[in-house]
Image 1 (cartoon, each protein chain N blue to C red):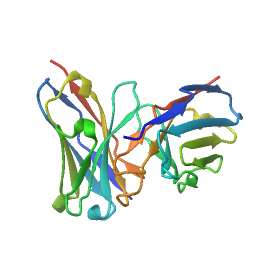
Image 2 (cartoon, chains in turn yellow, red):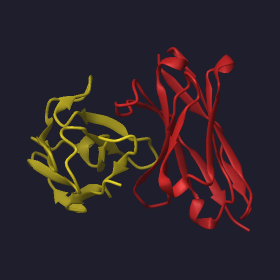
Image 3 (tube, rainbow over the protein chains, first blue to last red):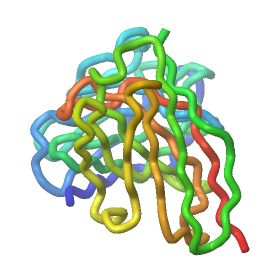
Length: 107
Length: 119
């Protein structure tokens, strides 16, 4: 199975900060990577698919990049609503794998 | 609008089975794959498998292959996930989610069903 490794596990930031989260795949997944945001007690919400495509309705301050084995999620200017946990997920194969998550907390 | 409405919380004893339902509306049930994902308390997301409502074919994560069964009832646009031989490690929130094709990621999710396994 393809393993996904996110870093950092916890990120402390302030409103207005530019934030970057990294996700690495154990083998190439071309661009079959999604990013999700999850808030406590809620289902995950799709932000980015196919590495860099913004899901409809998601603010443009979110962006994704990368290909192969290394990917990033960037929030250009952190807003209060963005404090949450973020997960990457590969969907290159029939099987899917999530990263372990990155919690973005208030500094 | 698209909705995936899951069944209510369950409490089960070790060794028992649980069957969680995911009733869909607002779209053609057979046009979207249904995935199941779980999340243990305070932990990350764990993918369990998918089911194609159009035909019923399934693909399970290796970890669950001998314990999980994903089915559907197209007459009521509902998907089911049954997990057998429960242990305390299966205590988790279970989510269903839909994906437009076998190769796509999930776009809409259910609200989750808490399954607690306790003696």
